[in-house]
Image 1 (cartoon, rainbow, N blue to C red):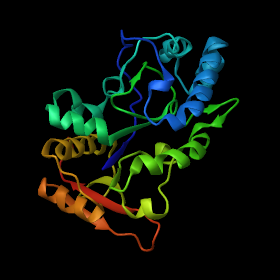
Image 2 (image 1 turned 30 degrees about the vertical axis):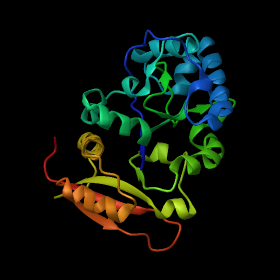
Image 3 (image 1 turned 90 degrees about the horizontal axis):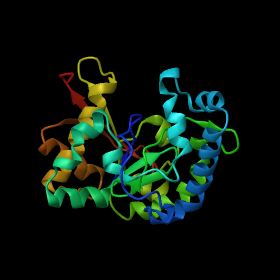
Amino acid sequence: MLVLLPPSEGKAAPGRGASLELESLSLPGLTAAREAVLGELVELCRGDEDKAREVLGLSEGLRGEVAKNAGLRTAGTRPAGEVYTGVLYDALGLASLDAAAKRRATRSLLVFSGLWGAVRVSDRIPSYRCSMGVKLPGLGALGAYWRTPMASVLPEAAGDGLVLDLRSAAYAAAWKPKGEVAGRTASVRVLHAPTRKVVSHFNKATKGRLVRGLLTEGVAPKGPAELVEALRDLGYVVEAEPPKRAGQAWTLDVLVTEVH
């Protein structure tokens, strides 16, 4: 099982570990693309601060993020699972998983990123600010930029098992499963049952708890239909929409009655 996660806008404080080694990150086929994005981002943030803030979509209160990006090559690192914070990652609670569940998390979780493309939770990265919606002056829109390298790397990472897609729309734009991989991909939405609307906070929290449940119980569904049964066994109310034709992903709606 491969679980595709969005990152968090907020990040933990810079780590005290060794500085970044791009070649050590998972999915080495993305190394050249990562170097290109990192190089332009660092150069941008070492120049005109106001221009960098505009490109990155940062408010005045986040001015310090520009300086952080300027120092990415020498900043301390920590595992990506510790760097990403926020509602989904709080609910996922990687640090409090038992040893077996942590091993499953390392094998199965893949966090998408405007800067790194995608990383595993064990990959050591510095704290940064660069969303997938950013349009760099040289490379252009990152969502479009990542599509080509992702298309050659992600199908292999997906292997022959289930792909559980929990990404937000901006990050889903960087890689869309196709063909045979799409047929074993399940995209999950969390809806408030009475209104059938997505509400950001509990959408993220429910996705985090859902992944935690699968990791804790050691459940490894082989495909979307098996995932539906696994989630129902974990107590979730799930509505499934199988693809209407080959080459499309499944859509699963998880219905939640309480907003928390």
